[in-house]
Amino acid sequence: MAKSTREFVCQNCGAAYNRWQGKCDACGEWNTISEEGAAGEARAAGPGRPPRKGRAFALAPLAGEDAQAPRLPSGNGEFDRVAGGGLVPGSVLLVGGDPGIGKSTLLIQIAAALAEAGHRSVYITGEESVAQVRLRAARLGLTDTPVQLAAETSVEDIIATLSHGKTPRLVVIDSIQTMWTDMVESAPGTVTQVRASAQLLIRHAKRAGSAVILVGHVTKDGQIAGPRVVEHMVDAVLSFEGEGGHHYRILRAVKNRFGPTDEIGVFEMTGGGLAEVANPSALFLSERDLGAPGTAVFAGMEGTRPLLVEIQALVAPTSLGTPRRAVVGWDPSRLAMVLAVLEAHCGIKLGGCDVYLNVAGGLRISEPAADLAAAAALVSSLAKSPLPPDAVHFGEISLSGAIRPVVHAPARLKEAQKLGFARAVVPEATRAAGEPDGLALAPLAALIDLVAHVAPSPRPGGKPRIAETNG
Image (cartoon, rainbow, N blue to C red; front, top):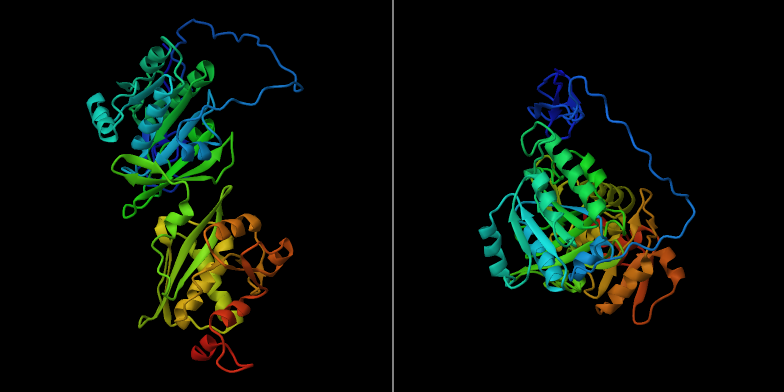
């Protein structure tokens, strides 16, 4: 009888070892290694049975004309934007997000929209019963849509059911961590089961031409749980983000083979489910305090969409030996760099002050173009001088104190003009692109010019007021 091989697999990152150990060398986590059957263990091979011979297949030339992958509109404009224009038949999407963020609500709405348009939509849950899904559909007012439901966790049974009748245009699996296959000897939710189950579902999607959406759990760090190889196997990875204290959610494309990455879709959580937000800039700026110091409007880009958000800063004296630096929605390393440049090149001493920075609305910003808006909010808070309420800011700050240009400046200015802003504080090089109608540009070459603009000197030729106060 063939000897059964065993291996020890980390349930956090998927690293395999020949023996058990307390700490995973790959991800550094403790007590995450468990014993499983080897992933490559062949179950069909028996004593004296020869291995299966491969079959020859046809090879296609590199030259040729192929039609562009057709798109299936999901009926949700924000979801289609993030997916690259719609669902591609045969594609597999992985959607991750915190528990209770609204993943199941969004996907049942998409399945209902496709079913109402005449397409076969199948929603398979491994975490809830059919009655629980029906209760959610009743709250959303979707009970009249012909969505087919099932509560099943066996991948072989799911594929056999989907193969009968008309090919589904959309299949939702909620969630991939609850699926299991008898091809491997592991408990559901383990790395080996998740990898094998995802491989079978992806193979079925490519063969049948169905668009499959997999729901994935996330870890405490916000990463999708399970082996990272699943993210490489699927065609798109979408992250569903949001804060519990805010009523809107953000769907972000982390990976997409059929469209741009870093694209976002904005949804508002209402009593009837998730509603699309066609103009997210107006939503993020709807409750802005116009007369308060320490607030600046940033004209950013999320994928191909310009987005205006408010950056809030608070600089307060501290009695602690080490002042606090708290950041929400932005990179703490970039805040430390901006503070260092302000102190080194602008004479602003912040060593005795606590600094708090917040991106309003729960949005997370990663592009360096927000440096200028963050610096303007910091200087405004320290000088207690409100910024003009009709001005937007964008620009990257270098370590020398110069303000560098950023990409997509015309799109940022056009979005600001559309929302009624009258001026834009921009890098000097942006002036070459031309001044749009109805929007005055205030080009800056160095960060010291911004400090002088926000906190001007009380006398001609003197230092900025903020520099005099702080030494």
